[in-house]
Length: 352
Image (cartoon, rainbow, N blue to C red):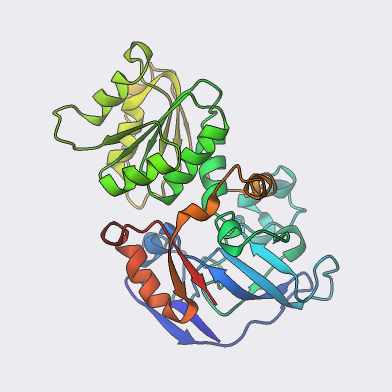
């Protein structure tokens, strides 16, 4: 089969590799019908995730068709259409029983294994461990483009941003970074009852997308009106107190620092971004503010709920897909996604 293979920082290729087969009785193999590229894949290519070995097939999101099942699999069958999420869950270990499969002990203590610890989904076929407790059957009437982003981006925005951030009705929520995961947080913050959602970004095109996804206000960081983003955020809150929740969705020190300055005393900073460089935590300023800081890796436990919202039309998840490619155009898809600002790209949809 053909697959996108990582060959070390800055190096990747579309290679011919061996077809996967079930290894353990709980495995399935899926034909990858639709996949995508994540910002984490770009971090891997930059060398920010050193646990990814050379020769690894990248990718951790897919919609596929079951083509082989292990001997212990009884609830899935050949030709079933399934969502393959970013997180694998054994369903039995201490963390899975705590609804925290992001740290599943059966797969090495980290639930994100596709394109990380085992071969991933940017390929014609993929092996899926612990299939019965990991994949989700896709109901009739839901398109691949609608369900694909439930593999990672939407539950990440909701679980790590909105839920960890404790967004509640009436809150002012600031989302710093209007890329795909920031837009997912914006879209689901509205469902959580936020009274005002403010998007901050350096790109006008991203801020326009933020308005489409439900942002009430947008702030162009580094704009020309002479006020800092922090000052503009303060001006949008009652009494200038600051945001109830500040969601960091970029993964660089500057945006994390902005969130800690923009949040009000007693508020929450929810970090989503994947940080490849150290960030200074200014406890000399924060200790007196009663601020809560949360981090997290998506668990995917909210996928069934989010799928229901997608089916009912409450979430237009397909809006995240702005560019379409064939599977054999994987390298072109990477070029477009890596230059997202140039191409006004959010997520790429890569189809068989």
